[in-house]
Image 1 (cartoon, rainbow, N blue to C red):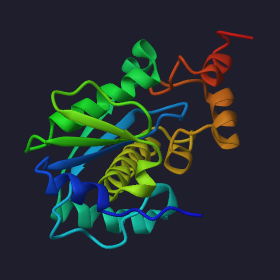
Image 2: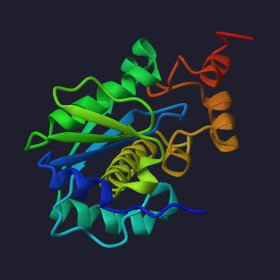
Image 3: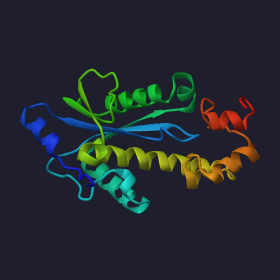
Image 4: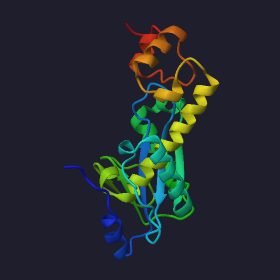
Length: 206
């Protein structure tokens, strides 16, 4: 049965005086190219936009509309782990770093941070990991939308700057189109050299 995101967790914590509550999620852990982007969102309980859901369940048009509604009613901040950081620290550590950057970028210090997944970044306040949090918790669902839209826009811009790779379509993920382009054109500075498909394209492994 599909989960439906609610504000129940946040409401319980707010009733206990643990607010404000920030939801945190990321986009871009799996791609061969581009950054990993994390977002932190503090929803206004009196102005929660309708239609918030895990970004993976929304099409691009719905995500863009939701992003605009979130930006107009909530506090948001993003953290960006670039390719150099991913290759140096590994994708998990780069993701946790980006999450912490997003939380620290909020205009208001959260009393509690709810993070999608099973690990939390190092933060100066209480944090809790929620598996499938983006499908259960509206604050995390909102963060998933902000992270996804932010990253998609970055990759679309990269596609305009580097025609031929198809970044505007596959967003750096390992599609057949991307594999062909990588083999034909070679890796760019935006490709993650710590990822095996990129190493194969560069002839670094066999």
